[in-house]
Amino acid sequence: MTQAERRIYLIRKLLKERPEYAGMKIPEDEESQKRLLRSLFNVRMPQPASREFLAVQDTYLQEEIRRRGITELANLQPVQSGIYLWKGDITTLRCDAIVNAANSQMLGCFVPCHGCIDNAIHTFAGVQLRLACADLMKRQGHEEETGKAKITPAFNLPCRYVLHAVGPVVGGRPTKRDGELLASCYRSCLELAEQNGVKSVAFCCISTGEFHFPYKKAAQIAVKTVKEHQENTHSSMEVIFNVFKETDFNIYRELLGAN
Image (cartoon, rainbow, N blue to C red; front, side):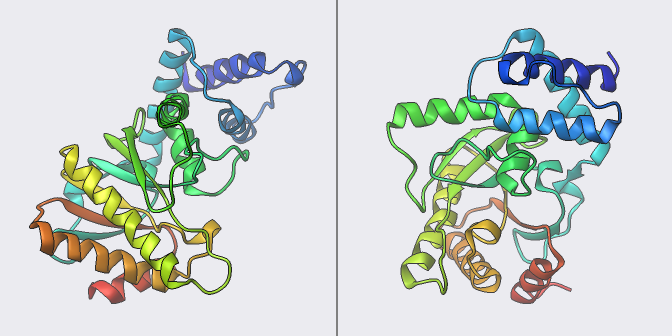
């Protein structure tokens, strides 16, 4: 199969799962097809898929990520001992683990083509990730607490694991408790990473964006919590602060004294 043939195959299979989409016409241009496929991934409930579907999906997603360009941690330069600052798409970073800004349901973003990191990670990891998260939540029996995290395989992403952290949702000015919960997200992820033998972990800007935590204050908490973990545990785990916006990059660069 070509990449285009794989995309059409996946779209048809996903449309077939949803009777309400019967008769929907598949767009002819590539970008519209990609948006439709991502939308179908996003709205699909956590459920098993056939071996054939997964084989085609996995090949398709891995090729899409390869075409977008994979960044190797080994090619990045630390800005401090054991700490990196990198601006880019976290779904294309090859390290041991990446952190996802999840919600308390821990099932990913169901809004088609939404711009949040939760949506991107679930899209490019594949349908297996939502099912793995659903299994974790079913065994737990309740939604994830704010400040806590879970770990899953990364499936089709270049990393090995995804750490799903539930950050505080801020309405207005963040309270002291909001700050404590955000710090707890970073500690929970670092502890889970250590327990699972993770040697490198990339943090997104947890609770900013859709959750409205002020960017600079969130970055200060992130850096402080990571450094405290390094000092208290003498950990050799490498930490990457991943940002997507230039404003966040400048904030972290100032905090870390990076050139």
